[in-house]
Length: 226
Image (cartoon, rainbow, N blue to C red; front, side):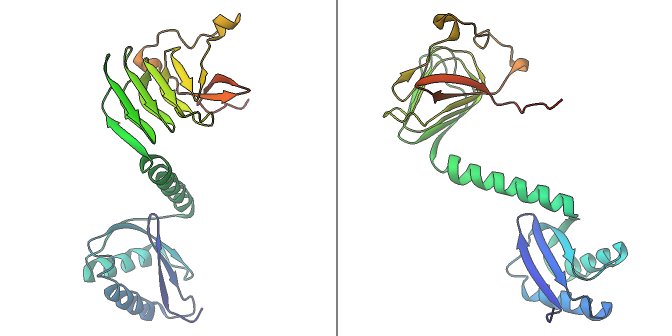
C-alpha cells in the first residue's frame, strides 16, 4: 500500500484503509488532512466508522475519532466491527431493494382502506394499514398490505399471473391474481384454516400467488429447523 490513508464510503458510513508501514503519529496527521479535504463531502454527516490495515489499539481508534470530529463537522456514532459491517450492508441492500423495486414502482396508501373505499394503481400498491372488509384494492402490479387484508384484492389486473398479494394477515376469500380467482380449499373438498378471523396479535404474514393455474396461499414466516 503506497497511500497513507484511503477513505471509502460504505452503506453504514466510512471505512478507513490505513498504511500499516507508517508511524502512528504520521498516520494521525494524514487522517486529519484527508478528512479536512473531504469535509465538504461529509459535511454534518453522522456515520459509523471501521478500520483496515494498521493494527490499531482501541485507544488509538478513539484518538483518531477524536482527531476527526474535533477538526471537521463529521459526527462519528460508533466503531463498526466485522460482524456489524456485514449486517449493516445487508440492511442497506434490503432497504435499497425496497426503495427501488417496491416503493418507487408502487402507489403508497398511508392508512387503512375502510369499507366502501376503492383504490386502483397502474403499477403496484403498498397499503400502510388494513384493507377492511368491504374495501377494494386493485393493481396492475403486486399488492402489499402492512396490515390485515379482509376486503377484495386483485393483483396483476391486466392478466399478469406472475403478480402476488402479500399481507401481515389474510382473512378473505375475495382474491384474484391476473384472471385467476382464489378458490378456498374447503370449496375444493379440502380444508383451510386461514380464513378463520384472527386477532391483531395473531397476525401471520402470508402471500398469495399463482401456481399451476391456481391461486395458492403460503406463509411468509421462516421455516424453523429441527
